[in-house]
Structure formats: C-alpha cells, structure tokens
Amino acid sequence: MSKRKKTNLRIVKEIYGDRKIEEVFEELYEKIYGLKVKVRRKTSVELVAEKQQEKEYTQE
Image 1 (cartoon, rainbow, N blue to C red):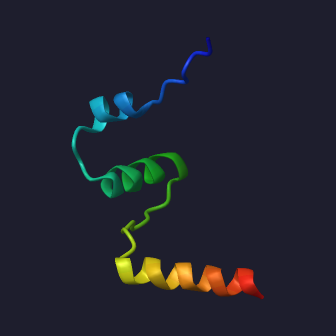
Image 2: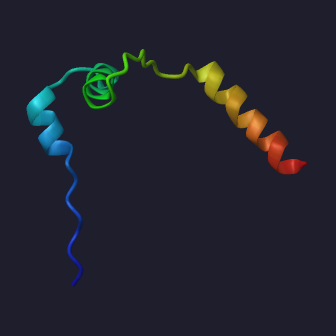
Image 3: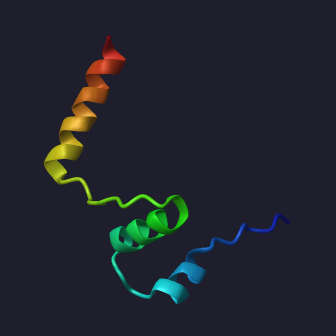
C-alpha cells in the first residue's frame, strides 16, 4: 500500500490562521524575496477571457 503524501496546509493554517490567502502570499513573498507585491484574484470575466484566448491559441 502506498503512503499518501501529506500537505503542509495544516502548518500554514496554524501559523497564519484564517487570513485571506492573498494576504499570506504577499507577506511570504516579501519575507522570502524582499519584494512588495499586490495579489488579487482574477474576476470571472478575466477567467472567461483567458480561457477564450487559450482556445483560440490551440486552434491555430
């Protein structure tokens, strides 16, 4: 029987709690790389447009 690989999600949840993932990513990125970044989620309109572009690209 193969062992399942455990994720580090529990550790992140313990350290950062229930904060938004965007905030956690910004903090970690600044801590690791020393760069201040702004993270946001894509809107549904942006996701649809991106998917459409991928479709057009693969058809060519």
